[in-house]
Length: 277
Ligand SMILES: C[S@@+](CC[C@H](N)C(=O)[O-])C[C@H]1O[C@@H](n2cnc3c(N)ncnc32)[C@H](O)[C@@H]1O
Image (spheres, rainbow, N blue to C red):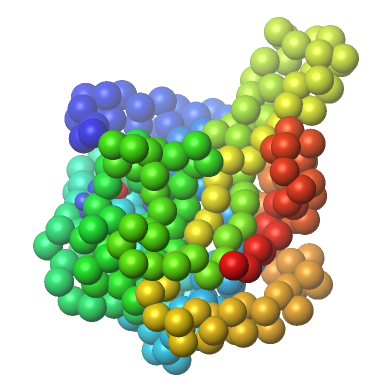
């Protein structure tokens, strides 16, 4: 659903006020993900995993971030894959932010893209938006993030099996809203929640809804990605402690540590744990 321009401008004003007056600048990406940050919370190791997968396909992969917004995640990937580009249909994002559109972001709907690509990254689409058929026409590998419970298309699925892909691997991270709930409870509702018992019971309800799925069509590619990712994961534990973005401390603070198991997710998987198919 397209945004109403006036709503967008009003929201942007609130964001600017926050930036002007808040002591907690690092919270902005988890409160205003459309203007700063992303709709999924990530660490540097997520970027490094995506880069590992892309390089398993080609040493110079054609990487496209679809619906990249103003390019927060794409800009991190570009550090490692300089040829990476993004496509974003809504140019009002740039007007609204009063920022020039970077050259590596094409302002078009994905429906206009016909060129084959190695990796399509689809980072969280609004519920109801579904361009999977278009992506399936052009991409060898699809990496997608979405909320558990489904959000795309009429039936809510964001999966790609019905387009002939098979899943290679998946992992779970928080969405911006999971982090936002923690921040709200800790910083913005202190007057309301003075009771420590209540506060701790809310911490126990903490969840992480965002799933990252990696898909390919070709069996050989699946094997290649598997072996590159497995090799990478052997090194990742120690690297995750040193290679971090500045904003990751908010994730630690909110209890979303690398490799932690959250009781509320009702599954045995740990955050950022990679599962192979
Ligand atoms: C919820 S935002 C997510 C932005 C970013 N990927 C993230 O996770 O923060 C979805 C973005 O996809 C864009 N989008 C929706 N349909 C699109 C299409 N057909 N082609 C290109 N971009 C599209 C929207 O304009 C919006 O900026």
